Length: 383
Image (cartoon, rainbow, N blue to C red; front, side, top):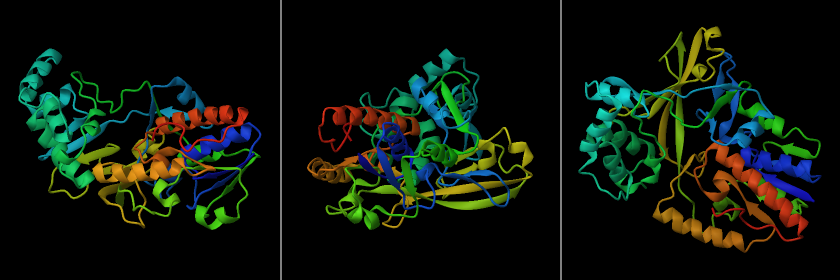
């Protein structure tokens, strides 16, 4: 079969590679000048530091088969994400752990004492949280919530925490020990040569033809594909017939510095008086080579509502967007010859490992449908 794969991020690349290994011919398009999507990395021309061009990405997963999959195509080195946060003129560790609690409350709690103490702080919070703020009050109490999450969340999402779902905060751990690893997964690391090289290695197959700087709209009318795997924005595929789905986007302000600028890869800024959400120092994402760089490159991150010309980062998925998404989903289900996959194709926030896992699941289902001579579905899992 002849497949057209739209988007050269993880979803498109993993799917294209699998189909190519099964003997199909793949044409993959990406309108950017590089593959890798928002995971794109490249060496800074002035310093040689590996820059995460659309914000930092740390690969983490609980699934051994996903970890083994990415290591087929790149050499990973272990990396632990240790985030710091500045609030009210002091620096703390995130996620909230025993050190954070003791430092914030000027205490020397044991793990059990800290649990008991936080329980008293959250005792008056709602027992069944319905939004981000209620979840925070239920989880950590008012002081920690206002110090670390209230203003930061408003900056990140442009909304009151009362308007956001509780699920956003549920992803973050609360620890009553001194573990400051931001993630809890057993497999964590960063590819030594960057994510773009990893994606290029996945796409390195004689049955895959990659076109960069090429939009789907300009080539699709002439294309003779048996099926399309579409990983771009689902509303764009349908020419925004029902309206545009909402996203948050990021603006980056570069800081060139001598030596070590902040001593850590990620520093969150939780106060309302600071317009940006965080500063990332990119040489610290590759600690195995950081000492060789005399200078440093950092980026301030500012979050705002995405316009039609912006790079979409975070799907908002509030009531208005979800009702609009439902209309596109129903339209997709009645459109033959195309399957929607990935973060943009299903309008969901997905970590890299989940993106790869869903792409691999889709690949196996594609094999099954082809073997049974069934038309491929619009979605390989509920979007």
